[in-house]
Length: 196
Image 1 (cartoon, helix red, strand yellow):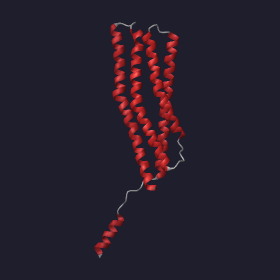
Image 2: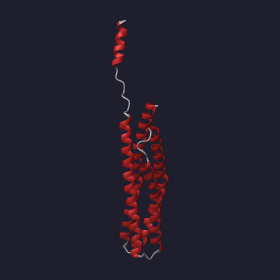
Image 3: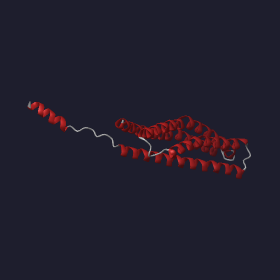
């Protein structure tokens, strides 16, 4: 008998992992959405300003070579191909109702993750290809005015920068964003299961 009582006493003393607090998780989810909204809005504004700047350069300096005009057009197309979906995601984040049910909040995050993945894979690839091709075509007219060493340096630095962005910055940024979204979706699913 005494061993049964000791066992029950030990069993009752065991600490059970505390369940996640739904209010705290929902608050963190709202903060994550806000950070994503701020970051995407900043990127969109910066890209739009860059596009306007490039258009003004073309209008002001009136390039003579067709490659320069095609390059500017490709850069503008790259920016537009990235900005339009970004604006749609921004709109969806902004429209999200923070007072919605846990299930709806979770489904908003899942939709956001799907759109983010589409933006990070297909559209980002298109953006990099168009932007890189545009930069290299745009540079031809101005690189012709340089010495051979100047041309090689200009193209080498540009290629190194594009490669650095493609192989180093892009994967790390994508991983960081995906990890944050996946962690939040996992927490929201736990809250949903707890409340169900």
